[in-house]
Image (cartoon, rainbow, N blue to C red; front, side):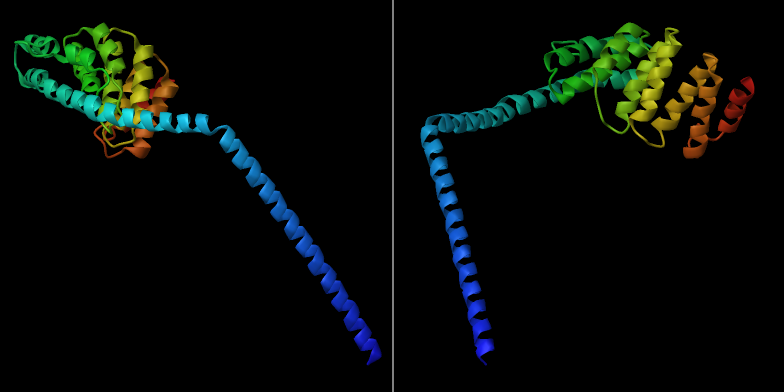
Length: 254
């Protein structure tokens, strides 16, 4: 019994020592936190004015952004969209007209009767979606009028992630280069158009156009690769139906 009690006392003393050490460590941590908090308070007091000014600046900038969006950007976008209706009317008429196409396209480009054309809208509303779209219409109009330099200029200003419009605008630049006998540039833009968005319409269309230009450049290996991609991934497209003969033509031309 004496041995047992002795051991118990020793263990009790050890536990007491551990508790004392724990309390000492806790007190140390609390003191450190107090010191840190005190330093933070001192720093805040010292920098109170700059912090306040910084906060005011952030609030002012945020409110300015909201005001700019509500009272400048949105009304500007609405006005540009409304202006776009007039030249689009002539653009659409030109698409179905049997004759006088160039005159209709010119009206769309330059406007009439005090109304803006695509060129005016692209210039005056350059920061809006409608202004961006005006670049596309202007570029396509010039392409139809065979004014290829202008077509390339305006189509290059247009930017869109739309599933169809994005690739078509890039492909139209390829068409312009093809028509002025710059096949290397045409090939580059056709490939960009094919890779812009992956879909069943524009991708095989521009892969096929790229393949044809590659054949023209006697780059038969590239042409075969492009035609084969249509076969493997877009066999049900218009271009995929007879693609085997183009693959064969490229293969045996090597």
